[in-house]
Image (cartoon, rainbow over all chains, first blue to last red; front, side, top):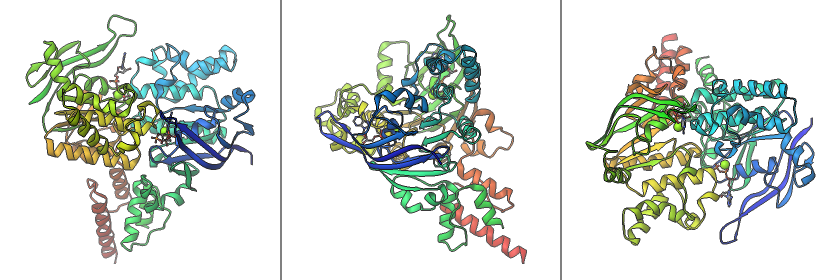
Length: 277
Length: 290
Ligand SMILES: Nc1ncnc2c1ncn2[C@@H]1O[C@H](COP(=O)(O)OP(=O)(O)OP(=O)(O)O)[C@@H](O)[C@H]1O
Ligand SMILES: Nc1ncnc2c1ncn2[C@@H]1O[C@H](COP(=O)(O)OP(=O)(O)OP(=O)(O)O)[C@@H](O)[C@H]1O
Ligand SMILES: [Mg+2]
Ligand SMILES: [Mg+2]
């Protein structure tokens, strides 16, 4: 098993306006195997985006280390390779728009990889298709609606075909249908091409789709396990400012009332089967 | 007391290659005291529509009026619109601009000409309302906060205005689940005690199902549905997918249970009520099978 992301005792602090240090990551250790689909959840300000920024060397550790496919993010000579390995989509797509046409925007990454024009065209076409933005190919990206911009930003990263994809709340502005389509496209890449996925989200139903869920609080990882294990700890999850999927919530309440239901229910279908057997 | 849109259309960048229709012949009346949800797929025109409510956009055709006065006829009218209609934008970065969180939230109240004391008091209660501690954030730059913290500041800035109409464009995007619940609880509290109107644009079906009394569905520049949420979510003839919307989670869970032939009412919402209904459905099933 190869390890895609190897984070060891990582610490990171910001400085505020008064030059005081604000710790944002506090001795975080995390190994993510190549091909794993990891969801990261945690309340506002818990350190998720800060962690994500270490994964493609936008930030480097104050202490501890962060290795991407074996490459130390502190080694500036490897910066290019790190960024090529880890593709990242941020919370606000405005910060990522670089060109005046959607297709140029999506082509920007692949062009920087020095790919031949025919390959670039193919990737642009495929990625726009994957996010359902084909008909906007010749539009100006900064004039799109909030959700449309987000889709373009995701297409731009998909076109780079990174081995590891980091999505930092990148579907927050999509309608429910669009969100499930984009998530399905990501799952497909993960399954078919073995891409490592780190999905940061406030949607618990999205986290359920991952192989593994990591919960952050106050700059630390405090839960780590498969979705069924994590979301069956309803009380603990709630105390962290989070929620559990509806099926897990109802299952836990039924169990409290003495109804015999397995502890690992997190999906609607599982609850239905357990109740109607 | 109402905001009224009469046959408005809006085209972005008319007469250029980027020209794009965003609203076509939309009419809508919003009364004080209403709680309206607006849903619909990406690009359907929701943000464009709500930016007409505070006069930020001027319709290409049709009129927008507040309490009977056309917003765009006199300069004075627009000023009173800005005081009465508070708007939280889809991306909070677009509305934060001051150097400190305090100044940012204080901007609206200061513009109303309130005394320093009153401004201070409003800022503190607004920050508290969105779950931020004054001591922690007041002196910080709003641009150096986490995504969810920034959104909270943007919401606080508008709450501090105490508007008569509160327009929220995707306010819960980026908020953690508890933060979302807390802020909505506060907004509901304000709504109930102040008699203001709330217009909530969201992709979150739970939010509208739980709170909105009236729901609008936008699709391709037009309002395609206008009625109570239950009428939309329980009308089998409406293809929600075509509108880019879905069922609230609880509703789709209940429908799944029904599909597995559990006899249960799928219009329920409250989790405790759902649990009780499941228990009695199970009991009925047991009784009838023996
Ligand atoms: N540029 C910055 N300067 C100073 N402090 C910052 C900066 N960016 C983030 N912080 C602080 O660091 C902490 C962690 O922020 P981070 O953005 O990693 O949180 P998050 O888990 O992504 O939150 P959210 O769910 O709101 O996006 C927060 O307390 C935040 O206020
Ligand atoms: N500044 C602009 N210039 C040109 N066209 C625009 C501009 N803003 C939005 N549009 C276009 O107008 C249409 C409606 O956009 P609007 O932002 O109102 O959609 P929305 O329903 O709010 O979408 P979302 O759910 O993604 O926020 C879209 O087709 C969009 O591409
Ligand atoms: Mg974040
Ligand atoms: Mg919008």
